[in-house]
Image (cartoon, rainbow, N blue to C red; front, side, top):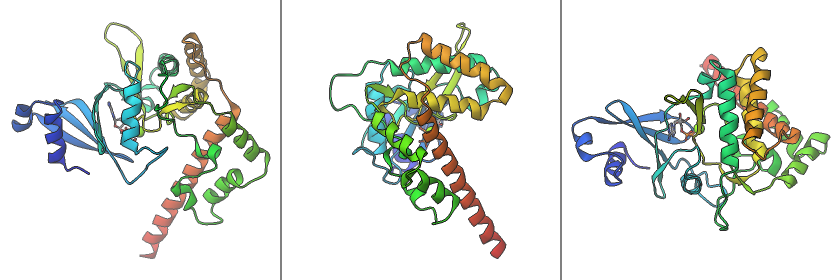
Length: 300
Ligand SMILES: Nc1ncnc2c1ncn2[C@@H]1O[C@H](COP(=O)(O)OP(=O)(O)O)[C@@H](O)[C@H]1O
Ligand SMILES: [Mg+2]
């Protein structure tokens, strides 16, 4: 991993910022604490670029996280994703996309923002797929692959998180069968984001053009995959960010804009189940972690 001075040096050599700006203090590198190591590069207080570094080995699909993200962004030039500025084996630099995340923007104007989200998603899913074979494959949700991530596997036996995961991974029930079927039905003919969440979509109001515009960031799980998965994730974001009374109008706006853009995905109930299993397991894991912490505090 590179230190802050090394990242600044790289920003200069790759032409992201001018050397003089670094020397006179105009340029600042700001750490964004997230799952990965993400820094923002500001010039005169304005974000110009983001750099993501490889975290603890999270190699998926044969590619390290940053290599995958760089390959996806290279394939998606011209799509509503950040411009790829530079990439090497340790880091990926992207141009800063202006805007605020969905959890801030959706509650203000649910219908226009949901419409922007639907239109943007259709554009991504219809982005031309090159005929080459080296296009990255999007991460498949773990309830479909049967391979839970280490965090889920580490849940203590008998815990709620372990039970939830066990039901779909080893179970013979209807839900487990539905998920296995969805795993077999997963296709890789379209570009997808793969990890669409309220944080990974930025919305801004374009100058003079009226309505809001949506952009995706964080494409490390992206590649060729099943567009219905992104659609299910986007609809779930509406449920998370909006009051119940607002959801229906926003859903309709999203689906109409997606259909108007000839988006190929559908609201697949099996994928919705996979999304819910992942969300519930995540909640159960974080409850477990908070309880563990509380017990340690009480015991000390
Ligand atoms: N090119 C970009 N433009 C604007 N914001 C960005 C960009 N890249 C990252 N971000 C911001 O940094 C946050 C973390 O980056 P992200 O790629 O999502 O990392 P992680 O994998 O840790 O979630 C994003 O949620 C977004 O707010
Ligand atoms: Mg993210």
